[in-house]
Amino acid sequence: MRLYLTVFALLVAVHCEELFNVDQVLRIQAESENYTEVLKELEKNVDWGLDFWTHGFSTERPVDFRVPNTSLCAVKDFLRENNITFTVMINNVQELLDKERAEMVSNAEIKHKTKSFNFAAYNNLETIYSFMDTLVASHPNLISKVKIGSTYENRPMYVLKFSTGGEKRPAIWIDAGIHAREWVSHASAVWIADRIATDFKENRAPVPSILSKMDIFLMIVANPDGYVFSHISSRPFHRLWRKSRCVTSNPNCPGVDLNRNWDAEFSGPGGSDDPCREDYRGPSAQSEIEVKNIADFITSHGNFKSFMTLHSYSQLLMYPYAYSGTNAPDQPELHDVATQANKALYSWHSTIYKVGSIFHTIEQASGASVDWAYQRGIKYSFAFELRDTGKYGFLLPADQIVSTARETWLALKYIMQYVCDR
Image 1: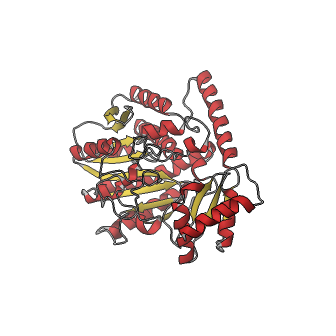
Image 2: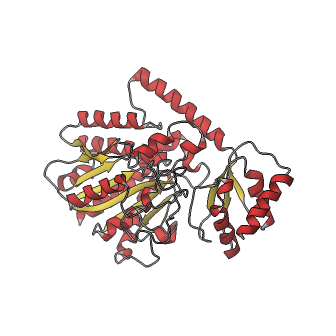
Image 3: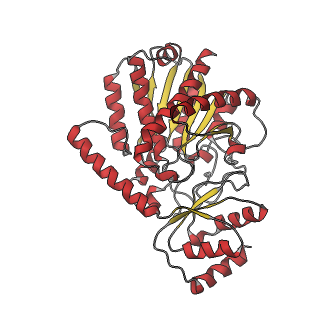
């Protein structure tokens, strides 16, 4: 297959008649083993520069991938030659990027004039960290900002601690943005941080009850270096960056997928040993300072009862395992909790999520944070994939941020209350 693909690429470069000058996102629903084999060959072909937005090739869910304009003609012809049906999910990636960038410039101007924070906007790291300082200053008896270490590029990593007093009380962990390009996860976490503070101040159930017994730790940006890089320009290469920004064994391919680097069946299927791949797992378990900082903090605390991580996109609410199709020991209870949380989420805007284990719902992934947490006794471990299901993918319009955050908050509240009651 690989030889055929290489020869085909050379031929199509000469004979292809279609011309494209925009990147597109294509979707393939694998209908047979032939489909998955073709997809695997496409993923291995570095010459076409494909950017896979969803991973894990199976007949259970579609595969989305961005195709650079220079490869569009060749890729489409290759798929047609192999009788692979595809659809165009995003016709012009740059158009969405330009619109997003224009909104950010406009929002920045408004913020400068009004001096107020806009929750319905995508904000850069500096603005998010400034927001955290403001929130702490406004609620000094409830919130503190904890530095848990620094990144590869020496940026601070901060966690917001919501607590009514006491040390190492039972606690809940929530993080967002371990994959840099998943901007709606960061933006939702910002809104959720403000909502926790507001609900406590206004004595709005169940937050005061939860915080009377437990602490909440919220990490808005789990991959600061990658997030900063994704803000550099509106070019797809920057905005759609997934990994960290460390140097690897290949100087042309920096970064590690931080959600494949955890000490949970590390180096198994569902993570790559190729530094040029989006799911590159790194040289060893927890080799990456960002992962080590989080893992060390949670381990040293020693009393976390729930671990939740926010990603995008696909609209999924999942639990362990990611590395294996074997049911986790607590699968029946975790599935029930996720199902009820999903009902709470649905009640806000009728957004449909799918519930299940990570392995069966999205893809096999070794070295994932949720498996790491669960294997270390944090029973109630869940992963969210926020909006949408592919119309915009990672480029979700900013006017959907607040609705996304609100519905996610309803699910988080249910899980937190459930954990607190037990």
